[in-house]
Length: 480
Image 1: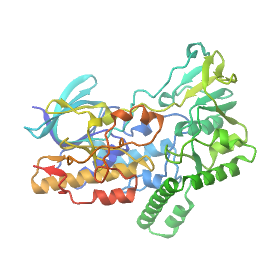
Image 2: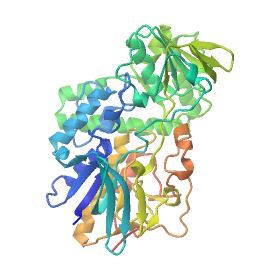
Image 3: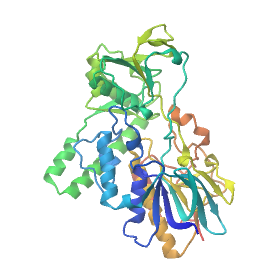
Image 4: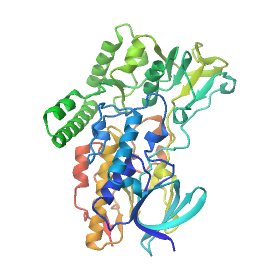
């Protein structure tokens, strides 16, 4: 007989660990497990090992509210984040529920039996189980490979070409000329880190600029609060300070984009000096938060640019040569190592093929309910993060919602919960509404948002938190 679980969580990264805490704590009668396709917990923070990897948002909000981040740095190194995730899983006994090398392939909902049949593989061997509720927490990108464009002449380059998602342990850049292709969070992280590793020079080659903002790696206010207040109170105040700052700065950027652009330019000018060409290299042709802002702790990128240990070149690639890259302008950038920080490949729902009574679920044909469920899909939730704030803020809202939903179903003896939109509710934008390349490449396949709550993610933690707390029997979520 196949195993049966109350809840199956897919993925043991940030989202999966947070979901496990919310669903499993103080509920000893609930049967649940986490299936992790890889052989370690940590998700992104275990997979990515490129130089300098760090958080791209503050750890007071990227960390879990039930296990606050107490590290010294607010913008933390990847190794410290991974250690924090291991500590969290161990502290709450979550690690005992993780089944490694369990890759979920497909899941089919049976309306007659009110359960999911989940097909998975363990070390290449196929197996199945059933579960009452399925919670997909596997992130939104392909762990196997990143987005890597092909350029003419790549085969003749005599040096090494690497993608940050598969950065090799044996690669030394000491004394070498390095080109990093890209302008996003990975690129701005790599450049100062490679300089610190002894590269002779690092060039960040970008097709177009990104908004880059410096912030302190350590939060002095948080340190003061923890010095003078009880730990729990200091944690709460620090977290809500960060939330309020994030919501406020995003709102200001959307309402007064030109003013925010001037403030960003003023900061950059102070860091780089009057002679730097901000217009060409650091001024995008879009408004702040049309794409995600890049954070650099303690101005590390600006420091290496000002010291001329690194350079930004804004141009397009004509072709690779044996010893570098020829640009469309005719200029040549010499290189011994080339890093292609060209983005991610999105992979929805962890790549799981979902179906209801044998009918394939196509996410782009469904609306998103409270940012956590798909319309007309029973007993299934998924986890995603904000585009304008830390991942955990949004994923924890979803996890708390699912835990509350399961408790409600138990209390009312309901076996099925399905979000059903009214006929008048129309789809508008994709769930992820940035114009970043990695999103636009798959925008037509993303789940859709409606015009109003609860079918819309508001990109505002405070508003979304209030939405998640509304009554579950709202007439939209149908129980039986």
